[in-house]
Length: 205
Image 1: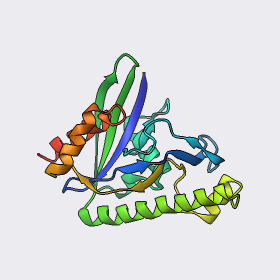
Image 2 (image 1 turned 30 degrees about the vertical axis):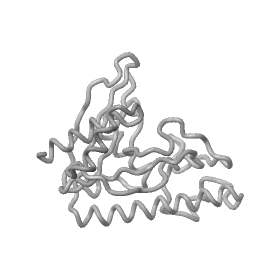
Image 3 (image 1 turned 120 degrees about the vertical axis):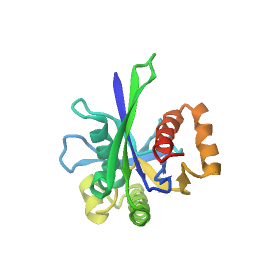
């Protein structure tokens, strides 16, 4: 069974980080390569949810728990480990969401104060913008290796999976929740709805 872990960084008012994916990725960390990775001059198409909203996350390694996977994926896609900044961390394990394919998912939730959330949100935006500058240099042949990329752009994420942060969504805002509920019917975001419904219940609404 393939298992996926997702990270939800949130504040007590119900806001959470939900970036938008790139449609193409131009650099990626290579597992087992220390701090090394690969760049792709013309990019690689992101087939799963490209251009859409997402929660940071991905497939668990063989020796990983869902919380470990969520923390690692957030680090690779954003640039820091959320567990380092959380005032409270708690986990949720879902059952199989597609039994025919043998897929299972879960989430790690990282709560921080509103003040810290706002600061981290600004930091994430800056890191993703740094990654987009690196992409421009890759496309124009100004960067020739993954190592050079992170020398020039040290705060860029390890993976070029995420593009930007759009508006803030809150599980406790009525209009936002209507949008989130609509994701139930979207194969690319239905499991995000389930995860965020768990957060909404946890926050008491």
